[in-house]
Amino acid sequence: MALMDFANPTRFLALSGRVLPWLTGLALATLALGFFLAFRAPQDYQQGETVRIMYIHVPFAWLAMFGYSMLAASALGILVWRHPLADVAHKAMAPIGAVFAFLCLFTGSLWGRPMWGTYWVWDARLTSMLVLLLLYLGLLALRSAIEDPNQAGRAAAVLSLVGFVNVPIVKFSVDWWNTLHQPASVFRMDGPTIHPSLLWPLMICALGFTLLMLALHMAAMRNEIYRRRLRVLEARAAAEAAYA
Amino acid sequence: MFGEHGFFIIACYGVSALALGALALWIFADGRLVRRRLTELEARGVRRRSAGRADA
Image (cartoon, rainbow over all chains, first blue to last red; front, side, top):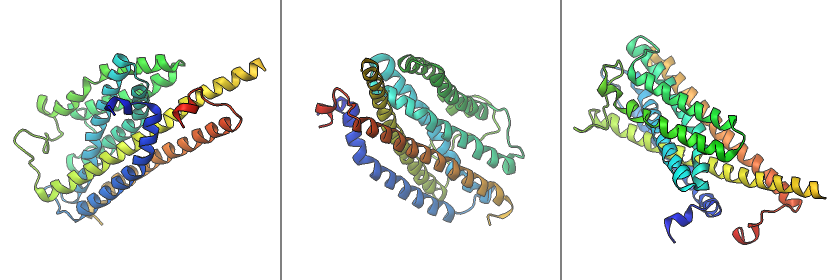
């Protein structure tokens, strides 16, 4: 069976119904292991105990960008192939990505106060991440503002593709401009600059949050497919009632 | 716990747990509501045209 054959709502429901409980369990188990290791990891020699915030802040930042990248990929599926499952994936990801982007900003702000002496500064990294959150919220607002679901899907796809230009800006802002935010310390050409005793718990927490995001996305996609079926049935019931 | 900056650490983890928990709960409750309404309509005999072959 070709991979594209799975991109059928009915097959997706059957497959995701089997995968979702395992994916959720794996996500929670990975997060439990990640937090166990994170709270046993040594303190940072400069940041002390506040380095514990890194184990959630950094995965939230990565996943806010990952979620938006998935939105952009789905947008291509909507505009180029007009695939219904791409629209379902796009719609389901927006609120999830918005929560991850908000949590990235929130935890970063609370980490910034003891380390930088301020909750917020308008530097390139923080501002571009705020723009990412606003893009997520804009997508949610746009979908709810347009009544026709197909038209709303296409408009949201265009906005998400235009907004995708912000993702590399978030990633490279710390290299392109002088920022209060530190430069990348994990994904670098010359390798991570974090000691393995802190890096491993971070990577396990990141894996756990990634699995959690995928599980939430899969569940939200299932809901959206059922919602579309409900809409069709409600329209049919209304039509039958009108003819009766 | 966590020294002088305990408030910041606990607030980060607490709000993150609350936000992600609320998101998961919202998705779960939304799914239950939609499936219940779908089941009600199907029980009244309203079915998709493709239901016979696709869901079989």
